[in-house]
Length: 55
Image: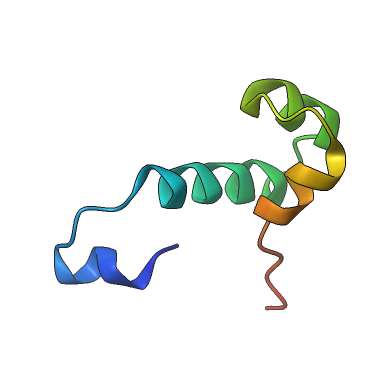
C-alpha cells in the first residue's frame, strides 16, 4: 500500500490498481483470474504489479 495515503494524499490510479492486484494475490486468487480481471495480456506484465510481502 502506498505510504502517502496515511498523510491524506490522494492515491494514484496506478497505486490503487497495484494494491488491488497484490491483495487479490495475497488472499489466494489465481494469477489467471487476476489477469482476466486486470486486463493484462501476459502473466509477465501482471507479475510486475504484484508486490510479494516477505512478512
